[in-house]
Picture (cartoon, rainbow, N blue to C red):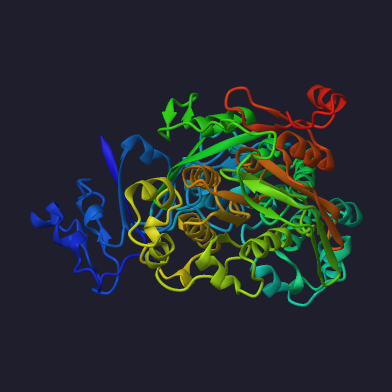
Length: 593
């Protein structure tokens, strides 16, 4: 027996512009039953899921890709935990939580991870799928009977445990706090008397006298993490804590978050950087389904098993395959020397911006080569990329908005970069109609097909990032200059982008420079590495391009961590400090394995 889940994306539906083909062609409506009906002509329709046959004709006929209909086993209906409204996203299940450990939640964007955090934190009250009804706490607890952490969950929903929540988006923090100084804000909320220890660990000393509304994204992220960890609570929730942070800052933040479990706290983390999630979490919950339509919460797995299961697309413990293909970190053939056919050579670089100075040795990039650029925040990676771009173009006066129309360039910040309809922007980048294979390999995995009729000005940060990387790769360019192409993207989108960059470079016999903080992405992408070291915001010294093994070894030595590979899928894993493997690799001076 199957049940229907029908979801309508309200932002995409334009009932005054389409002639309402969803209702017009519905076979159930033609028999006289109101399976699809419009309450108001200018508002999205309502789909009656009990009358819907699941034929999906409405899905295919909708010109704006606004409708999704899926058939699910009726057993799942017993696990419905929350629904946002009629024909809206549906959440099945709820994770088991345990004190004294870190539980990671892994899944695509739009699958319900943030919803789960908000429910735990009391920001969203679950309705068990009963839209429009008042659901009391006892009903919720009855639905959770059998959950291995029922007693803990009962205390959370009855308000007996205090939850501390670090949100995903940080835009509201400057607006709410305004011109107060960082030191003033943190001293006021320091309930644990841990001010000195935490600002030292998160490198916040330098910005203590800065006003909150002047902070960068990375500084805001560290402020939010510090604020959460300084407060007394029983449950700590972190939504994407590594966004905007460089590798070193990610590791320090992970160590601080992990230290909460020593206080026997419940810690739940949503994270897309697999290397950091593996390093931080004790357990992992996989969320799968169809983004923006429904999400299912898996049972709790160990971190290693959970991440490997996610990459495999198959949860053995539940006999569930949620993705057709597995993901493996196949090491591509790398050259240890400079390629014979050079695409571009650049001279020695000396540039000063304000009080910051960057020095870089001369070098070259070969045909079919990807060079990664690595280093901490504020060390000059973006400056290096822009200097390489200027050297290649031979003109430093072209505005950024014009550069992206001439060459495959994805800047670090993309807000306000695009104007117009998404489909028109993509066609302009490619130079005509986009072929089916690119739709399947790039546009659909990045979920841009569902945004084709939207205005770029209305897109979220993650959607804009996907649009920016997609337009850059669609352009016919001898060299691609990509600044943090994986920012804001979920695990599957990151892997799509990584594969697309490599495929584009090889197929077009072009080259690419890529700035990236995700160690797994850098490892998978790069043929050689430029490592920039120095003192952030003061000076940076960029090396010549070096072999990946040498470059990653230098980077990891600087970060003071060692990495091994998972035998099953070759994904890089950070060794626990002072473990047997960690000590052995340090003794051999093999930080990168």
